[in-house]
Length: 304
Image (cartoon, rainbow, N blue to C red; front, side, top):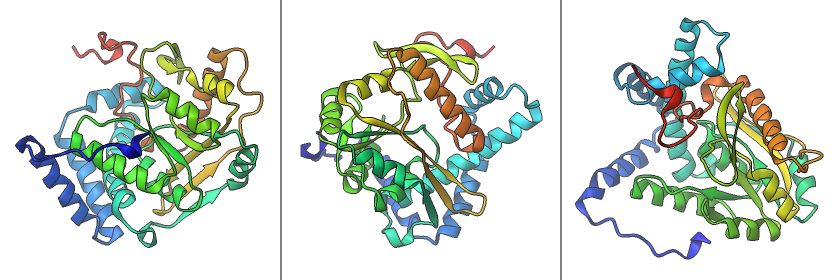
């Protein structure tokens, strides 16, 4: 697993801007949280109005997922999503570098469901989706309910290293997304692994299935992992409340799971995700091309 990796070198000039950015945000993370939240919303507002990168993706996603909303409502939701993204930047900084005493108020509901699943001794897949609150809620979760995580290498090597160090420091085990054997081994050893299969990409464990009623590449590996390891699948969702506190909800382990039909299992998970995304739609990660069916074809994201 990842803890034995050699420390990378970032002496090359190309890494300097990212290193400076990391140091800047480390300094900003020392500011009072009320100041950071204002800065986050300001950054979100600025990017929504002045930086067009991914705005089209967000608009398409919201139009497909919420066709019942008017164009004005979809536009307002997109603006709220960008504010949530801006907050997510500072939430990530807090999660990576701040001591526990500086974390915002939060509540964990349903921990008995996780404890019951862990008592089986066969490992747990802590099933969730990609929300903008991902990092801060994971940190809050880890403070009282230790777990392991999967990580994907970020495109920027400096950011990827910061992410890896932060997750390894706060979790019991950190496994690369590409290390299937490592994931299976961790589950068989009884670890609880944070697992978000909602950003599907084409593989032998994928199918095109409805998500918000729209065809989307869907990861079907969850039921296979549960079958191979005997791990319980326990849904978990973390959202930001209007008052600035956070609610982390752990649901009972999925019953009658897995079944012999991985496609039906995956549809069940998609519907579960839809239900919880609707509870806080601005906080889901809409900048991802969720409805792209292949790498080569932009499909619904084609611009004219």
